[in-house]
Each structure stands twice: as C-alpha cells, then as structure tokens.
Length: 249
Ligand SMILES: NC(=O)c1ccc[n+]([C@@H]2O[C@H](COP(=O)([O-])OP(=O)(O)OC[C@H]3O[C@@H](n4cnc5c(N)ncnc54)[C@H](OP(=O)(O)O)[C@@H]3O)[C@@H](O)[C@H]2O)c1
Image 1: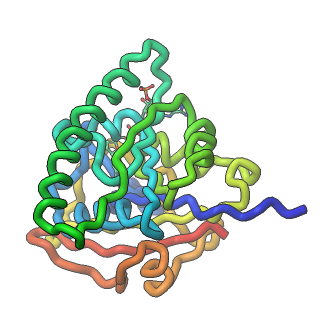
Image 2: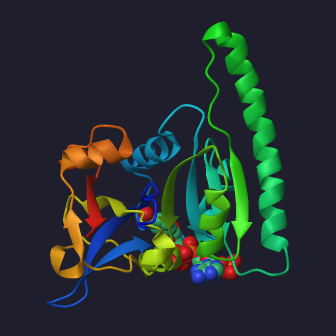
C-alpha cells in the first residue's frame, strides 16, 4: 500500500551568489552568526508573512531551525510570534531547553497583553492569532515526530541554518513519508554587483534538473506561500531581491 502523502516540507532561505572559481558559484546565507546583509525589509516581511500565515484558520505553522539560527533572532523577538519554533540542539545539559522555556514564557505574557488590547479595541470582530510555541528536540526526526502528533499543525517550514538545511536535504524517502520537498528562495544581490562577504553557505550550489530539482513557476510559488509571487527583481535601497521556488523531482 502507498504511504499516505503528507503536506510538503518547505525550506525557506535567502541566498546570494558567491563565485568561488570559474566553474563554481556557491549560495551564501550567513556571516559571523548573522545574515550577510543589513535588514532588507522586503525579504524580512515576506519571511514573516509566509511563515506565520496558516493554511486554514485554527492551524499554526511550524518552523524548524538549528540552535544557532534561534540564537540569531533578536532576544526581544524570540521565539517568533504566531508560529511553533522547533529548535534542534545536541545539548544534553538541559540549558538550551531551559533558556527557550524561559524566553517562551516571557514572550507569551507580552503577546497575551497585546492580544487583550486588540480584543478590547475590535470587540466582536476580533480574530485570535495563531499560537506562539517553542520546543527543543535533539534531531530532525524527533522534530517531525513531535509535529506529526499535533492536531493544530499547519505548514512546516525549515528556516536554517546550513546544518539544518543539510540534514533536511539528506532526509531519506521513508523519513519524508511522501512529503514533497520544496525550497522558497529569496535571491539577494547588491545593485552595484559587489559580492557580499559570507562564511555560511546553502548546502546545494545549484537547484536544477541535473541535480534533481525543478524550478517552479511564479503561479506555483504563489500557491505554495499564499500570496502573489511574480518572480521579478525588486529594488530596496542598495539591494535587489527576487523570490523563486524549486521542488525536488
Ligand atoms: N540566509 C538565510 O536565509 C539564513 C537562514 C537561517 C540562518 N542563516 C544564517 O546561518 C548561520 C547559522 O547556520 P549554521 O549552519 O551555523 O547553524 P544552524 O544550522 O542554525 O545551527 C547549528 C546547531 O544546530 C544543532 N544541530 C545541527 N545539526 C544537528 C543535528 N543533526 N542533530 C542535532 N542538532 C543539530 C547544533 O546545536 P547545538 O550546538 O546546540 O548542539 C548546532 O550547533 C547564521 O549566520 C545565520 O544567520 C541564514
């Protein structure tokens, strides 16, 4: 019997091309524990909207991330609101778990106060936001099992960094349980053509048919993320960004 096909697993990433030789261009994603570029609102708000928008009311999306990516989020915004953060760590001392638990508690208090204000202001028209939650697990497999048991689970995004993208891209067919594997990518370049400095790279240099991937049309990406994506380059200050999508064949 064919295993039942589950919703897709979507890697969401912003990359910049870094030419390392005549033949090889890598996709840079990080520098010194943070992003290689200053805040680019067009991309940050795309990421926030897409990852927090549930497929249907009452569901909450999950974001799987490495412990270093969790730490790269500003402390006042951790864990990110309206989503379930799944933090992968090998820590066995309990300190990562305890740190996340405390940050979640504080964040929930603040969000509850904001929700009460919004409810008072909008009365019967008030629509509650998806829940904010965070869990720590020792491996990707454990993350998928934990999420699989949640009835309110919406979409699952893998938000990095390189180690966790790599673990996801190496998942075996049976671990994927029939899920499609997708990448929603923001290409980032400087308008003047100067490359960014990067020390962390996406594990794949190319996502083309030769490597087992196909480029999705803007209409498909629009459907995946729930808002219009036209695939055109957009300018923001000194930078240009373009949202594209790929699916594993
Ligand atoms: N451009 C983008 O879209 C984007 C997205 C995300 C991140 N980034 C950037 O990427 C960089 C961080 O990436 P990174 O690769 O260094 O770190 P990462 O993947 O975020 O986190 C690495 C940590 O995750 C845990 N981990 C990784 N693999 C594991 C496994 N198989 N089993 C259990 N735990 C595992 C370990 O945590 P412990 O050490 O706690 O054991 C490890 O130190 C930063 O510069 C960040 O800004 C960029």
